[in-house]
Length: 211
Image (tube, rainbow, N blue to C red; front, side):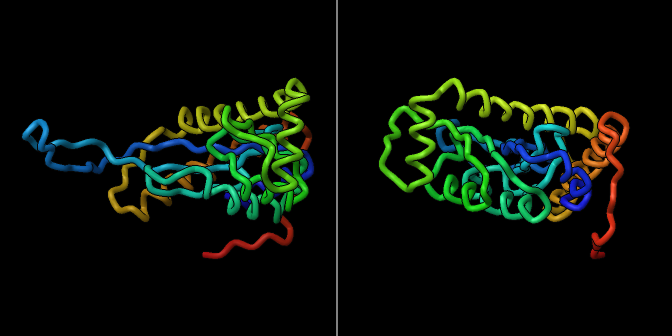
């Protein structure tokens, strides 16, 4: 997936991150003492992805259990994306707000556009203080960058429309691979768009594929 996005490094410098769920064919069952009967619900898994906001290509993706928190996944997505792209800014919603995440984004020389919560204050790391000041005193500028985050929702919507919003595999490893295959196919379709709309000539020279 990451290597399929690499040819677009020449046009992508702004990124957004979020997560989305994929339904599965497996069920979670439990006995509910309140209602005195067995309950069940569809299982689901979650894809955490970073995308380029110009082409909507997926630059990094991790698939986890459906109940996994979003915030801890950001550093790994950053690290994978920074290997192939020069990052100028990263936008994310409040679920990703933490001192560690802001510092991690600045560590790859990008500007973090993550909105602060109502109970946030200026105490914290240098990265936290800088962005808190920008959010507080230049909110219009901050939000103009932050709203690029809507592109990641568009990416998830397009990927599910093209390749489905659920997985059919029962094995957990196969479920992860099925989501990754959807992301790979989506990236290839975005690459075709970039070839025709932006005049990109993909160059995979030097890229290795391990089987």
